[in-house]
Length: 330
Ligand code: TXA
Ligand code: MG
Image (cartoon, rainbow, N blue to C red; front, side, top):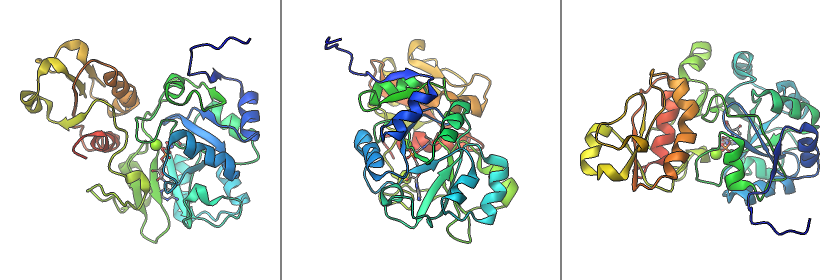
């Protein structure tokens, strides 16, 4: 209309699959809902489109991307050989919040997707809108979480627009993500199956099917096996400290902190500065609200965010992992 408006986050948001598919076909970026977090999708076979993801996110090019499609057989059609133990897990968890790292044997996948390694990460996300979109496409989409590199992952279309609205052609709005933390990543590169990232499918659920798996290093390193294990990640702008809040609070000005709690508020801190993730102590509910709560606290006029330790079981492991990496002690 010739009016230069002041709105900077100007991607169109909606549920038009045709528009989303067309943008992807044209090599553009599209925000897509998944059950874990929103992804920033591009044609996974088009190196220029994939390069656009790295540019939009300010993502280091050594950090590889997950390829997504609507059915595992399609990856076989594109030249990947899916290992037997992977298929056992896939029967239960695909579509779902589980990503498989397998040997890269396809000549269709650009080096930028794998960061030049001999492995590729694949997932079938479990979201009806995105499954319908992926089914329409003759290629998989590469899709990292749709946030600027290092910041908290998005769990609503509005979160995506707030950070990447200017870079994205279209955001497919599938509502708030049901799981709320990223997929669990499991590597099948070696005979010993290895968990690379805690996420939306619990360790217990995986081990119930394939037995013991190798766990990620407890310490967080700067030169990780999976670049997603980079120590500093998911960070809020307001410094975050994870610990036992009732003890930590003595070291801070209680009027100037925000609290990210599992079940209970902390008596010393103003109630408006506290977010309780699950009053009933349900870890899945806590995971679902985690990233939105971190963003909300990040917008408050406070000096520190104090986050509780969550029980180290089920989805609590993924929550603790994200909080640990977000924290100033990580
Ligand atoms: O739930 C999710 O996994 C979301 C949604 C959008 O699917 N995606 C996501 O992508 O979390 P991203 O890029 O934010 O995290 C993917 C992680 C990165 O830490 C990356 O290093 C790791 O997966 N990764 C990707 N390809 C890999 C590979 N070939 N080998 C080892 N790690 C890999
Ligand atoms: Mg991410």
